[in-house]
Length: 77
Image (tube, rainbow, N blue to C red; front, side, top):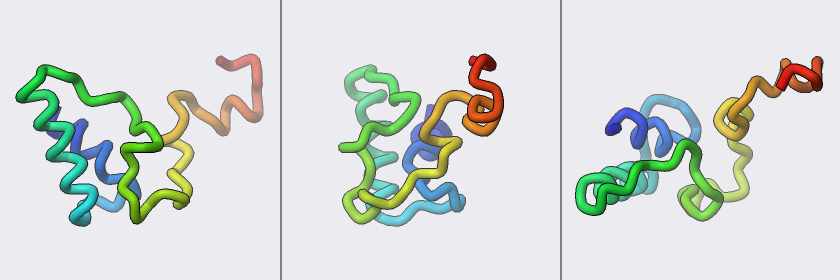
């Protein structure tokens, strides 16, 4: 669960968190520990740290399926 929260917060997928990303990870962990709310599978737009809004999110984080395969073979889903 902690790894999922950290992975979600690492929006740029560089292996380390800035202050906003760390705050997001702690928020997700706090929701789970205090209220039993599971972290989402993907961040919603309002969960993305303010300094990163408008920055493209890597496609593999944004789509739950293999986008390249889908684009090459639309019947693959």
